[in-house]
Amino acid sequence: MSALKIKIQTLKNLRAHVSPSPEWLKSNRATLLMQISNTLESAAVREEKFSWWKFNSVWSFLNIFLPKQMVGYVLRPVMAVMAIFGLVFGGWTGTVSASFNSLPGDVLYSVKLATESMQTSIASKPEEIKLRMEFAGRRAAEVKKIVKSDVSKIKKEQKVEEAVKHLKNDLEIVKVNLETIKNEPITEGSSQIVVDVAKVVDQKSAEIQKSLEQTNTDEALVVKNAPAVAAVVPALNSNVVLVADQVKQAAAVAQETGVKAIEVIVEKHQADNSTVSKEEVKNIVDTKLKAIEEKMGRIEDQINTMVSTSTLQTLETKQEQAKLVEPVKVTTEAAKVTLTAAKDELSKDNLDAAVDKMKQSSVLSQVAEIKVDATKILAVSVDQVVATSTPTVTSSTSTVIIKTTTTTTK
Image 1 (spheres, one colour):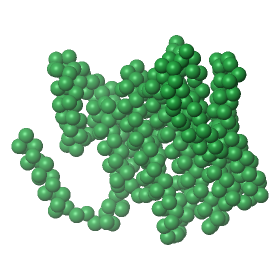
Image 2: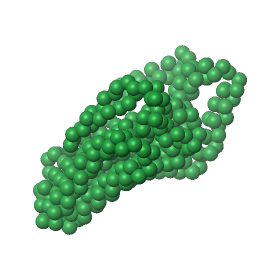
Image 3: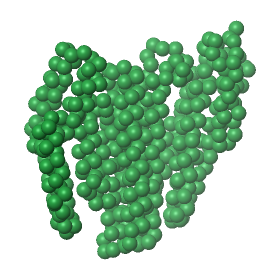
Image 4: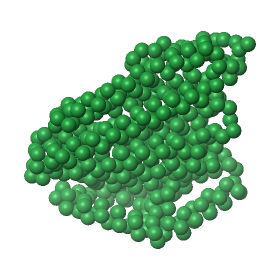
C-alpha cells in the first residue's frame, strides 16, 4: 500500500511542475477527443467480451466463497477503485470498454461515468452540450434495460433512480450551457455554431423523450394478474408507481430541453436571418407543436379508457368520478386552445408569439399528465379498498388538491 501511495505522490509532484500553455491545450483538445472516441469504439469491438467476462468471473467467484456482507460493503468499492487505477495506469482501454454496457449498481458503472466526465471536462461548450446529449441518451437506454430486467422491484426502482438522476443532471446543464453560448459575444461563424448545436439538442431531446415514454408503456411496468387497484395505488404497489413516476419526470425534462433549444434557434434567426431560414424555423416549431398535440391526445385516450372501463356502478360514485376527471379535461382543453393559437401565430410568421404559445402548451401538457395520474389513483372505487382511506378532490382550473378522510367499507 505504501508503494501505491508513493506512486500517487509522484504523479501529484509531476503534475505540479507541468503547466501546459493554453495554446497547446486548445490545439490538442479536438485531437484528443477524436482519439478517445476512436479508441473507445475499436476497444469496444476488440476487448469487450473478454474484459467483461474477466470482471464478471472474479465477481461471481467472490460472491460464492466470501460472506455476502463483505462482498457488498468492502470489496465492491475496492474493485471500483482498482478499475479506476486500471484506467489511469495502462489498462484503461479494456476497462473502459468493459464498463460501456454497465448499469447503475454494477462495479464498473462509476468508471463509465468517470470516462464521460473526463470527456466533458476537456470539451468546448458547444462540444460539451453535444456530449451531454449523447450521455443523456445512454441514460435513457439504461432505464429501458433496467425496466426490462429481472431484478427485484426495489432494486429496479433504485437503479432507475440513479440513471434518471444523471440523465436529468446532464439535461439541466445542457439548458444552462445553451443560454450561455446564446449570449456570448457574436464572432464570425459563432451564430451558426449555436444554431447547429441547438438543432442537435432539439433532435436528441425528442429521441430521449420518445424512448422514455415508450419505456413507460413496456410490459415490465404492468402488474399482470393483479387487481386493478394494485396498478394505481402507491401504498399497494409503490415500486412500480415510483419507477413510472421517475421515468415521466425525466421525459418532462427532455421535453423542456427541446423547447429551450427551439427558443434559442428562433432567437438566433431573429438576430441574423442567414444562420437559419424562416421556413426551417417554422418547420422545427411545427414539429414540436405536433409532438405536444400527440401527447395531449394520449392523455385524452387515458381518460376515456379509464371512464369506459370503470367498475363503478352506483350513480353517486359515477358522479364522484366525473368530478375527478373534470380538472384533467379543463387542462387538456386549455392546452388544445393554446396549441391552436400557436399554430395560428406560426402561420402568420409571428415566431416570437408562436414560441411563447408553444412553451405554454408544453407546460400545460405536463400539468395534464400529472393530473391524469392523480385521477387514476383517486378514481379507485371504495368497494375495492378495504379498511383504507377514501380520497376526495377539490378541483380548480389549475390545481388538484387531495384530501384524505378515514372511512370504513361496509
